[in-house]
Length: 272
Ligand SMILES: *Cc1c(COP(=O)(O)O)cnc(C)c1O
Image 1: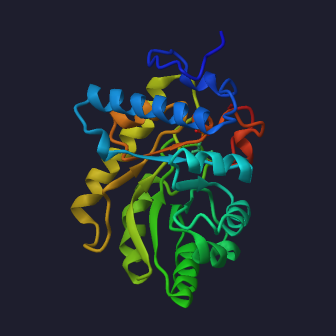
Image 2: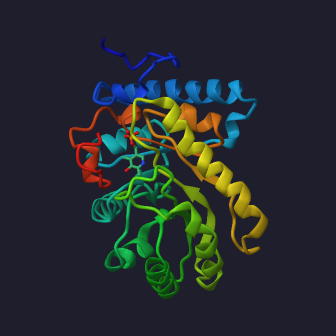
């Protein structure tokens, strides 16, 4: 079954099976239409659980997308883009300096030796999961005279090889973060299990929200926990139903990626 871009159904039994079927957006009109469809789906998901759509930030994810297509999405209104890999994001940032209000969120795992780059250009980092990276980012940010919004990445799926802190370690981690004054902690981020079983996907999102609710009782005052970044093209409606405030959507806006997800996060052999 081919799924058209305009399909607004929410009852697909296997939303993630749709990956690979998103048409590539080639014109500003395509982007406008894709964004309108996603915004309508966000609004519908909010409506189902009595939330307001203005509580949700749609973060378009432009990894693997070339500059020309990113410029089309900019023309359609995208101003804050998510990128998984620092090198790629940094090059795009440099190439599109003329778009003065275009901002970048790094949503992928970071090695300490790339912290300097992130400190230079990013406005947000969603995948903080080690004190070494926190320390390196803070040091370079101080040097640049900048600060950075950060989300702490939590491994809610229990997959051993996925990035992110185990839920039990997040409370202790948050206690350490006020020492890094250039980091403004805003909340938590997770990648759900990539599974056609929407019940198991939903459990990941529930786990993140419950963890956040617990942490609110004990986190240092300087630590913000309002933001929950969870949900991607295949599962953002479930995430919204479970409390997401940020959804990271790539393929449903830009079109299917040729590259497998295993390039962006480690996947247990054979799991997907
Ligand atoms: C690529 C990516 C996304 C978006 O995935 P899509 O399937 O393109 O919507 C979300 N989060 C992270 C961390 C990613 O790397």
